[in-house]
View: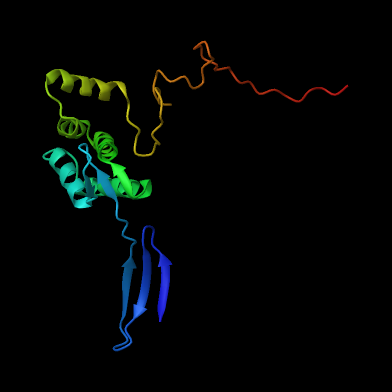
Length: 179
């Protein structure tokens, strides 16, 4: 006897042993073979543990918990699996850098210093300035492509094409008089 349920990224099956009658649970996940295309053109099998190790090195002695890093690693791995059978290493690096920066900007910069192979303090300063200029989405916000973020003070939402605010005082009006 078996009872099957969806468990997010897996199938949960409740089973019963035919020999002893004990019940147990199994989780079945599809194992997608994703190849990572490295900068030099080599292809390598995607490894979640390698990704998690890189995240942990960047966040070493920073106020980021191992649970947060594990969740970030899993979300990046899910995005990689959704992208298809091959993914550029730069895409994974960008996801990791953005994710770490959202958790802790200093960890994001530490990751970027290795990932982007920053050569001197000017390149590091440019990266820090980029982090300051480009607000990252919060945990409950979606990342948007483009120059402005809705919560950014420079956002053009609720502005006319000339940049002036469209805010209008709303007054409650009564019904129109009937003749």
